[in-house]
Image 1 (tube, helix red, strand yellow):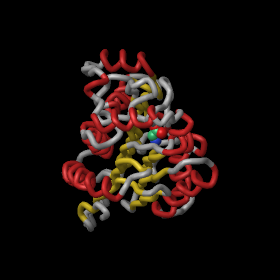
Image 2 (cartoon, rainbow, N blue to C red):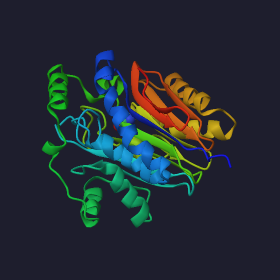
Image 3 (tube, rainbow, N blue to C red):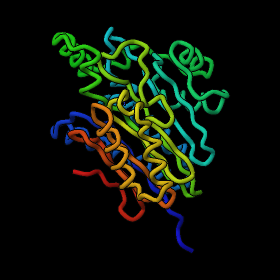
Length: 299
Ligand code: GLY
């Protein structure tokens, strides 16, 4: 009997990523895939695998999520995340929450333990406490490189508006499991210098994250631009309408770039295990796994 297809793709952010940074952080993408692809092979659900992949990114100091998050204008850290199960078309997110090392897991708790789709701010942090998550101080999420970037940008008198146009980074994962179920998850520390209380696309289903019976999508880039075109839903609907995941990823990036400022990227997997990865920025940290190709992290 033919093996049922499985597939996994991850992204660690798109934007003005130099070749040097890409090369430096490329091994981490391979390590994250190296830990999560075997889970998929061993029969873990797509939801388990995308959550674990995003948690590994959140723990890694080089990516803008969890530890390593961007600093807001006032120097604080506020996080957004979503997770979505394509088999039920159920998902949930958290926005502008502080002190949570694994926001993707908090998003999963919102999905599984509340009737809600989005919880924000101090109330989301309170909910994290009620779920038994240990809250950490901002200092534990801030790495020196991000603090230096924030200081440089403040000194250059950049405003939140400048930032909206120039950067954006998230982490995310999409997977198809052996049961034929799809899932997507996305997490971010948001935009450096953004105002407190700002919520980006990574907290919004249909914008940064989407999954249904046909595909699962995770987007990265400038949240304000992604939200205004509902980029993940554009990508997912293109798959429903017959596009391949690669065509759909390219279309969604084009729709963003043609209609809103800033840059973006998308990863997508469909229910046959085909993958799409596209971006219109300088670069995107990315990689994928299929049984035929193994773990692939582009040079
Ligand atoms: N895409 C991440 C953000 O804009 O918050």
